[in-house]
Structures are given as C-alpha cells and as structure tokens.
Length: 74
Image 1 (spheres, one colour):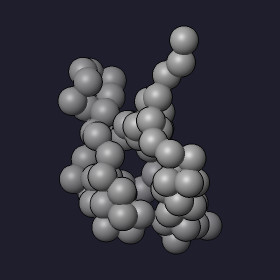
Image 2 (cartoon, rainbow, N blue to C red; image 1 turned 90 degrees about the vertical axis):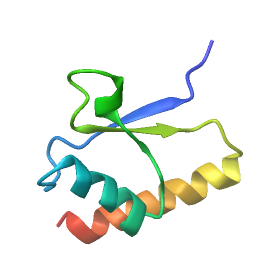
Image 3 (cartoon, helix red, strand yellow; image 1 turned 45 degrees about the vertical axis):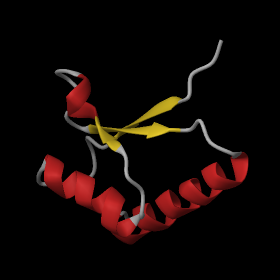
C-alpha cells in the first residue's frame, strides 16, 4: 500500500488568503496544486501535491518548491 498525495502545511507561511497561497505555488513555483480546503474543513492552510509521477519530474517539482520557499522564508 502506498500514498501518492502529500499535504503541504502552510499555516506558518505569510499568506493573507487562500488565493494568495494558490498564486504562490502557481506563479512562484510554477506548480498547480489542489487547495486543501476543497477536501473539507481543516484544510484551509494546506495544498495537496500529487507525487504519482516519474522520479525526474518529482525531483524537478521539489526543486521548484525549494527555490520558491527560499524566496519568502528568511
């Protein structure tokens, strides 16, 4: 058994709204992730990353995330 979904916790990130959170991942990281709030209450500060993809693509996505995070977290 395995899971291919990762929920990224953004509760400590400096996002003012869900729209700003979504824009960060799309515009800064170049990734389209699912908003956690569509999965029910309690998901407001989460973004879902589907990792069911080839390893090379996953590595590229994680590198994009690391770069984008480094731009806003000091």
